Image (cartoon, rainbow, N blue to C red):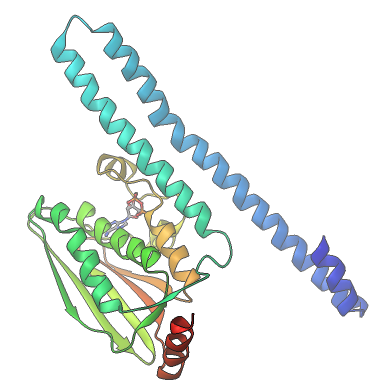
Length: 271
Ligand code: ADP
């Protein structure tokens, strides 16, 4: 409402006033609808693992005479609680990212180093499926932002490539600079993504294959998180994929020009 009053004052022309009023209302209604939708989805997604934890606890109680059954239910209980933990973690991360100005105090980041580290940290998961990760290329300039958020985004992309690819395949991570933009692409030899679902996979909780996502520990929020992290950094994410021929996700981030980098270094070194 505050915004509407301000618009009335700065735009006294009747036509413009009506236009802005309609526009703001649409924005508010849309934001409310998104929030209501998110809460409904979150409740739905939490119900399954929470219900499973309760049933498994009861099953363990009821099979105290049978050590093998206790072991079986306990293993499943661990798995469900891990799923719940991942889900809660991603929900919190995404809610935080939907706020404004998350990257309040960014730092100068060597993207090349960050990408190599992200690949290293996902190495074990890749080795478990005998998948090789090769990182090649380099960006010529640094970027500016929150290194932890960018690490999360890069790791989500590599993690997806590992989870959706069959064993004994390769993942290629490429870094390059193009006209003041740093580009990082993650290419896999997985199943690919059907054309009509390529936009939708960036929506919260949208999955092409829900069973596969859950079975591999997915939360359905990974790509939404990547998209928001990129938006917070003035960057973008795009996808190239043909079903049966793998997927390539590419993120782009604005590079720091020399003058801005110098200004930032000067202000960083100030007490
Ligand atoms: P999830 O936790 O389900 O992986 P994401 O938001 O990370 O959630 O991805 C959304 C959906 O996009 C996944 O469920 C999967 O269907 C599809 N997807 C994401 N990455 C890939 C990939 N590299 N190859 C094939 N499908 C993918």
